[in-house]
Length: 468
Image 1 (cartoon, helix red, strand yellow):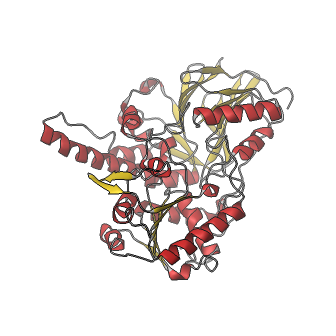
Image 2 (cartoon, helix red, strand yellow):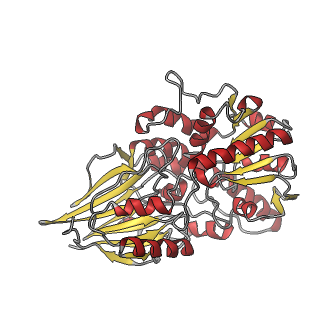
């Protein structure tokens, strides 16, 4: 029987991960992510899935980030009712993130329909609703790292720690047909070796085919101590300027890293001079999940008897009124808010009140996809539009590359190098030039059979592990 992989989402781009695994008469969806990065890209989420929903027997998600999980409620809305396999902590995070995504889809549709009514245009439906998201969660089946799960006849699944965010997994799929077994390993998103909170990614000794992310395959993150020095300088400069500091941060992963680092560097960064606000209901809930699953990572994000970071001047602002209150503060506030790419969420309100103020600082701590407001700011936009009004960009911008939750080129090469039999590796989840640079590096240093994934490409998974 055939065992094959077909590549669709996150080929030649970073968001919208989606791949199809086929074993004889069975079809499994590996990832079901939302496409992000501007209105044109996001409209692609409404396209039909690349395989008939009725033919899908199971879904596997590597982790909770929306670009890997965010189309699951749409899949369910269109008729899917089979199992969705995830790591235990990923299930807990998806229980927060997917309903929030459904709610935002409803609000976005309401906003768009207000404009369409005024113009006499046809109204649109939300991509999916909060109810769709909640219904999809009923299908989730979770497991611990290392557990062996039967997915469809002959196909078994194991999750290993990917070190990216809480619950993130390297996915190992082994298909056994009569006396022969073949293994596909998907990296998911791999963590950075110096990650503040998460443990390093697990390495596997052998595979027949490897599917690997390549987000930062063309660069090396700066040494972590230099990143800490850079952040020290940012807080010193911001304190002298007597403005506010805005940090757009991903709800899961980056936010918890920042809180941990702030506690660790409280005296060095003189954070007693600031009030620190976590202005995101979803990030507050996600941080509580990190507390529940603290056994999955080694760093001490929380005190021994506490579910909160060890920061005496830390505030969690859940309500809209509390968030609006921050906008009355002219100086001395550090505001961590979503979204991480400035493509929505409360960070937009804080930008509206601070982006035109040269005494304020904007600290970018994560990848900014093409088409997002965050990318335009990083690329030097002189003006931006927020809620229909145009604002001059005078805020001081800092890009802190060393806080990425993704491994850099050295991490990616080292993770693949652990495969003793040098299996063919296909690069996904990266921009084209980045992938070309990584492919050249892996061919030169490891003599690796490395290929850049193409949309629609089908890969036959054949046994190649005799050297393992």
